[in-house]
Image (cartoon, rainbow, N blue to C red; front, side, top):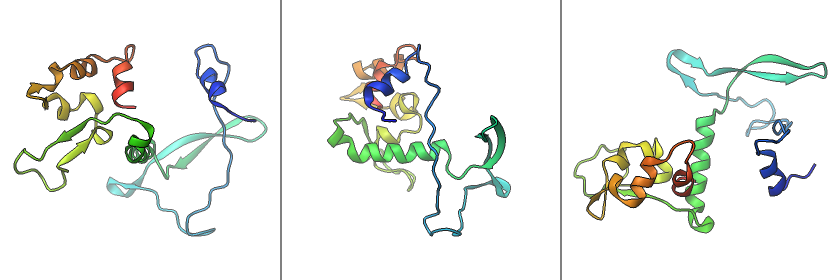
Length: 161
């Protein structure tokens, strides 16, 4: 079945009967069949575990799984891709210049893209920043971002696509 942008937009509508997209594929480690796969290890040597639903002809059944690639990790890679393609795609980028802040921890970049802010518009990076000498939250863009809500997300969608 072919999915185009119109069908996808309609499927995301409130009155849609579409339940989701199912992609079935065989995954092979980069090293080939039988090569090791190494999920992230958390404190205490624990793996991230989750429950998925497998359809076996007779209906869905729960299956406990070890998560190889979690949603935040995927989101970080997508954000990095958007950052690389921002000019080509015409995406806005709020960039924070920290070069005049004196001594910063070595892990902190001197210029930080909005694609990398940990908490987007709610981050202290923006709350404590200035734009053309004015406190960022008091600028037109800053006010729009700070006033954005789940019901009124336009500014977030515009500045943090």
